[in-house]
Length: 53
Image 1 (cartoon, rainbow, N blue to C red):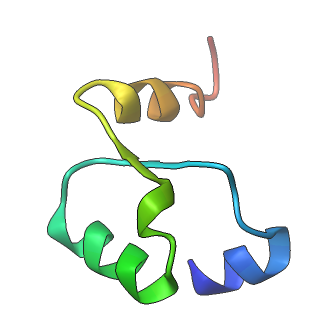
Image 2: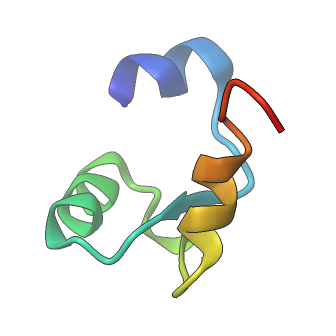
């Protein structure tokens, strides 16, 4: 994740599920305020990356 942030810059929001490891990584990178955790928000993101729609 650190390399992607260097390459593409910091996004407005990062959508993840509620795993503690994501929270720890976001705190380490300094992006904890940009993390969005929602019950169905991650499903919407993952379904947009399907090979067909």
